[in-house]
Length: 363
Ligand code: FES
Ligand SMILES: [Fe+2]
Image (tube, rainbow, N blue to C red):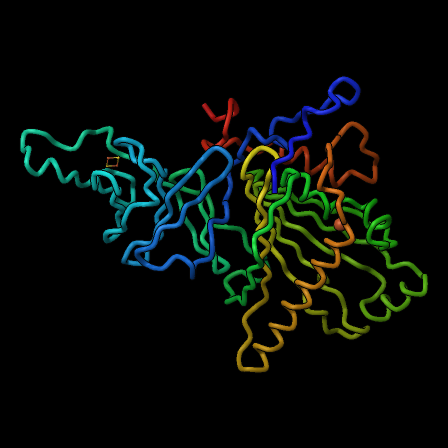
């Protein structure tokens, strides 16, 4: 898919409203980014990680540790992803300089014959925090991350069954794509869900996570009556957005099962976004449910994951081509668009990371 930047179009008649972080391709905010599936990075293997404006070499050392370094060798700039893993370090293909987990050069073969010379202090590359969760490797644009990749509160500490979809590319910015779940108007017009949703919003004290719960009365129409029978009068779903690049969505949140005290099984999915270039973004969808014991438990988990995937595809198909050529505007937001306005304000408070491609880098 080709990048598509709509910012420069229609400037004389429909000037673009730019934001400090929201929908801004020049800013990579701090946050965890999906690298790849854990099982695809065996000990001794290297995986490139490319985000708009930055390239890393991510490798798994022979001890099993995953290490992420800036990809270009500080000697002459060879791409370290074509190098070789040695223990928990990586050796550059060109002159065999070797870098440890902190990015420090620990060996320069030619210096063995020149005892008067030592490893130059500049011979180091930056290292980044790495985390493994949801069967996936994640990387953070700093040496240390303040917290691990977000989890669903009701799944904290539990073993999970995970289903990773194939990566997709989308031409709109991730912040615009994330708005889909908050857009109450389109629930009626596009998805034909006749619900008046009210919003509850909680922002974490560090300002990096925003939880949005939308709930409303199920209407008394014919399909509504069926819904009421199945899950009571109220419907609710929730989203947890961290760093405006990972969305954790819960459907069927705490809804009674056919009027009993039992609850419908909640369906969970994660959207992990990464800008590839201005106008091109990558989406990794991850479906999760708690791990259940025995063959029946396994089957039940698979069934829930299949339903979650199917639901995602139905909703996505209904959204159609909206995001393929959208010049997202924030000029006219109505009271019903309040969840969107909240998300935009939250996103604009996020901090730019060192991977931001242009002028917006932190000082
Ligand atoms: S370019 Fe990497 S060791 Fe020379
Ligand atoms: Fe939608």
